[in-house]
Image (cartoon, rainbow, N blue to C red):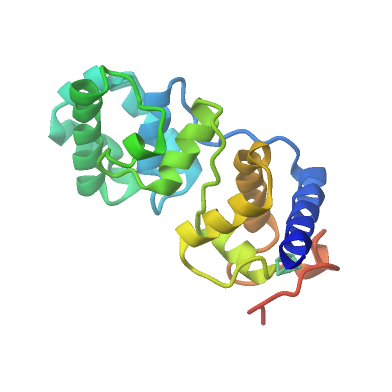
Amino acid sequence: MAERKAAKYLKRIHDELYQVYGDCVCPLKHESGFQLLAAVMLSAQCRDDRVNQVTEKLFAAAPDAVSMAALPEELLEEIIQPCGLHKAKSRHLKAAAQMILACFGGDVPQTMEELVRLPGIGRKSANVILGNVFGIPGFPVDTHVKRLLNRLGVVASSDPEKIEKTVNGLIAPAYWTNFSHLLIQHGRQVCHAGKAACGACVLNEICPKKGVK
Ligand code: SF4
């Protein structure tokens, strides 16, 4: 019963946000699974608009796994430097490209188990790739998703894997990918990390505002 109530509540949250934001598209520009994988990797602690500026230059030099694996590391570091953490990111990106060539026949793998074997790819990134490239439902939990679902009282946890599992158990797979986008949009535009704009929020009436001062 409690679970049925929680599922109903989560669906209501989804529906209210869907009314505002509708079907969302991945904000990271890409023309292939490999390019989204690279963009997601660069997006760690970096804004999407900056990632898109950098990937425009990066994909001109190395649009696929073959060219990325062959790109000199110094040049790669120089190109992705504006995204921050450029040394680790370039190391991971090059190693992931090499592994895709060596272990997956040059194609980005299509399962969670295989994707998280790639350097620099965790469950969040893997879910972004599965949902946005392959149409395989996944619920990426980033900092916005985590904050909103805690404030809304859906979860009381900072563990992304636990949050993902909770949501997966409460709402049908067909909603997962877009629901994550909806929460991210709402986190960026209304339920800010600093000061939540509850007065302007479509969820104001139903949200318990847990932890909101
Ligand atoms: S009511 Fe406030 S705390 Fe709740 S989701 Fe909206 S902005 Fe966030």
